[in-house]
Length: 300
Image (cartoon, rainbow, N blue to C red; front, side):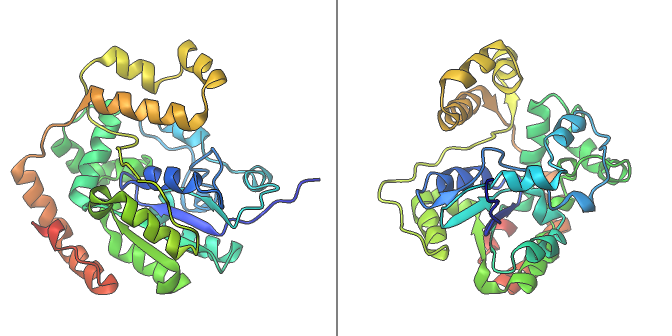
């Protein structure tokens, strides 16, 4: 009978803040294991109400693991130094930290943070490109409280997800500053090699020898060609065939490259950005004081 291991690394979010890129870089390290199922969302299930009611939410719900045996089977018989999982709603549902601590009180936590205005806009365009969001960004922001009350999945919580202060504070208080690594998206995008090596040092692992070339994973925006977008994003015969013959990492990189070339994202309206800046300003300042991160670029 196989032995189930317990994860000792959790990439907990935030969504649309390079978590997939960090996951991919780390899982290619010979001392790191992540399952192919990137976001089991098992430990946050008690903080959500199923089924969610937003368009397409049932598809996302089906990807959430709710069975203990199935969850621990993801890590069965692994001998790597680092065994991780990367469920990015664990940050938003930040009391998931209690569940992680109960499972492994020595776990390392990686939190990816992005300018909350840009993160919200990216999440919006992600749902637009999926064909799930039909409102303008401004209309969607006005509808957010109503959607939350109607139990839409958290990805629809464009503004609320970016209130990082309480989320990060809870993890730091639970695990200690020394066990929580904060990665700022904008810094990472400028120098992925440096920051991936910094994460590896945080995990006491050997650093990368080659360069870490960054490209956006799970890009969002308006499809230039809807047929290409539908073929790449949705299940079909071609994708089923490619799954049989191409390695998962190659498929994921190919998907990201095609989407990056096929998507365009309009700029946010200046008045909308000003509104969001006022909404986030106090939270950003509190987060900066808590973490000593330089987040002034988010306030520009």
